[in-house]
Structure formats: C-alpha cells, structure tokens
Length: 260
Image 1 (cartoon, rainbow, N blue to C red):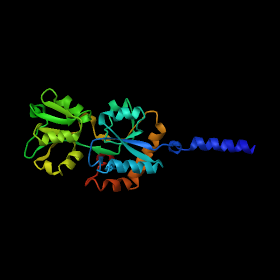
Image 2: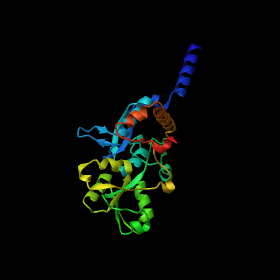
Image 3: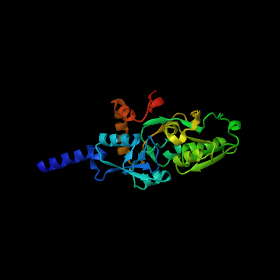
C-alpha cells in the first residue's frame, strides 16, 4: 500500500511540475547574428550584450531555466526555431499574422515605431508623390521591407540588405536617399561619428498594422513554455524589473503605448 501511495504521489508531482522542471539542456535563445544595438550585439570577447539579452536572461531566471544565446542569420531564425536548433527567438521580431501561421509569440515585450533617416536638412513627405524617384534602403525579410514595397514599390527604388548595418552604410555612402528602420535602432546609429550628417526625417504612422509589437517567438507545440514565458514577462513588467533592465539602454519608455 505504501509503495502504491509513493507511486501515486510521484505521478501527481510529475503532472503538476512546470515544463521547465524537466529541461536537461539549456534553453537556446536565438538572436540574429548582425549587431542591432541597443537590443543585441556581440562584444569582441564573443559575449552577447543588449536589452534583449538582459531581458531573455531575466525571463530564464524567472522560469528557473539555464539559457544560452545562439546566433543565426535573420532570415534563418524562424527555420532554426521550427527545426529545434533554437528554442526561443528574442531578436526584435515583430508579431505579424503571417509569422503566426508558422510560430507562436509571447505577449509583447516592447513596442516600436518606424522612421526614415536621411541627410540633415532634407524634407521627406510620406506620400506617393513625395517618395517618387527616391532610392530607399531597408533590411530585407522585415515588416519594414514589406510595408515600403507595398506602399512605394512602384514609384521608388527599394533596395534590401541582409543587415540594417549595411543599409546604414549605404546611406552614409550616399548610395541610397533614405533608410527605413525601427526608430530606436536609428537613434542609436545617430550616436555614431559616421552619422553626423544624418537625421530622422519622418516618423511612419502605425497604419493598418496598428501599434507595432515585438514578442518572443516560440514553437506552436511548446504551449507550456509559452505560458511560462508569458507569466515571466508579465511579472517583470509589474515588479519593476523590466524598467530597471531598460533604463541603461533607453531614455524613454520602450514599452510605450502597450501600457495603455
């Protein structure tokens, strides 16, 4: 009878433990291998730094899992997730209906606005007439690339690049007229010496996508892990840890409109 009781208690314990309790290998956090400050970048010693790195480690601590950062090409992140080379994406990936057909997302952990950057003193009007004849640089395989192609692809020349860094370099070299990207990332680039002749020219209205939301990408079958990650993000947002993590990187509320 005691043996049966012990077996029964063990079975109950097994069923009630969270998914993270059975993890043997560290959770692999996938980030794009390109530098994307202030969110993710790799130091010369090989260590990853940035807001999303710090946030991912805080999430891992909250769900009591060891985690490692694994980099992949931006275009390969979703494939790496679905083929189990990584377990979660934390790389400024915007939540879209198209991506949700393939993977799940956590609740949003920051909101972002898009903007155009170009030469200081330039005037940019975000209409079809205003953008006619412009050469626009943008990182490929992003919501920005899809949106600018849809809105201005037949009146402007759209050039896509593997990384935002390359798009920015093309603007500095005057091979494109403007670049489109997350305003936060552009503001970070504008702190660099090579950007001294550049400025934010125009903010992009939210449009049909509404508020742009960024979340952690997870496999559809990993429902338990998604639930734990959601709970961890919610806790970090309410206990002050999120704001503490964000403060070294941003002089404004990166969660922004999502608080309303």
